[in-house]
Length: 422
Image 1 (cartoon, rainbow, N blue to C red):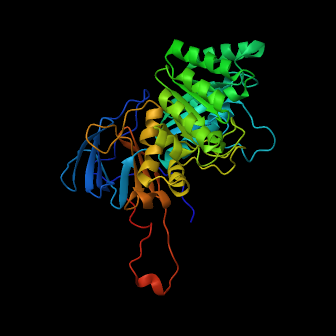
Image 2 (cartoon, one colour):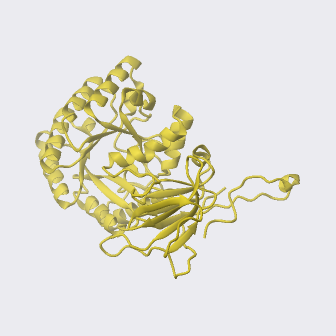
Image 3 (cartoon, one colour):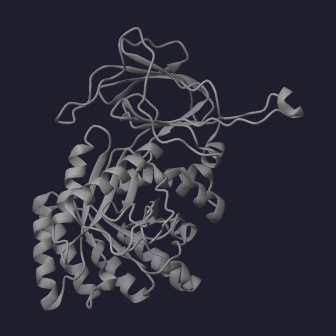
């Protein structure tokens, strides 16, 4: 059954509309929005009132009033919105092109914007995009993704990670200068792939030093297949705050269990967050495979899940869907649906330095309504979705499932379909 693209949201109200769009500065509209008849994961059916970008009140159905718009979400499960901790907006949507893809600034901006909107339609109201700097593209790709970030303001939060190729030796001098310029331009996270540098340890030292100097988080690509190198990285990263994220660490799953367990303990002691990529890899790391999620979690490592490649050469069929990542963690890697969804929501948000979201008064109004009665069902059949960012509906995807006439039509069978919220 095909799923429709996100459609502009609409609502019913005694007034002309719902919370209006954010202004040029991206400030949240102060109008209220009432989500009516939402099901929570504990089974309660509630109304949720949003105002000023936060959840103002949660009450029994019919108990809350609002002067703004109302959206009927009966039949929907209301969840904290997921976040995307590992995207590649500059290379997204390039799989079908002939030959090398373009790094023309306008084209990169278009791809990054379209990719972010696709992921927003899936529910991700915050995204972290890794962007290559240096070499042929210089800082142009970063400038284009930063421009996409500005154009998305009020719809989704997009942050960028600057990724130089080499940082050590004579060749690395240009890369280091480019990385410094990238931070000045607006890259809020420093990163890259030390595995591709002739001196991986020196690469990490350079990144950590620059991050400490500017107070930036660090997000590094590594396959984590070399136990000694991983141990050094963990030891070096342990003292850095506001924190270090590593991904996708697929090589850790190919190591002997005892060696992998020792690596997991080192990462846990260092306070490192690991972002795994259940839907496939990314172009920055050649090897495929997913990190040993259960082993890492058992060691106390915070494990988030990202999408990685979105229809580029590293994964031509990548969907960029956080709920698919959670589904794969549950179906292939044995996580409970609740833990799997946490990996793409609360842990992913924490990895991005974002505040926690709960469907409770006082928390940020970053929400995802998914058609379904429970989390397990939502992960397996999450076709219809309503996405809320800063207290207003910013994306909607509706699906209708229909069957031809048969002897079964008289039965009261479940389906996604008519009666979508208005």
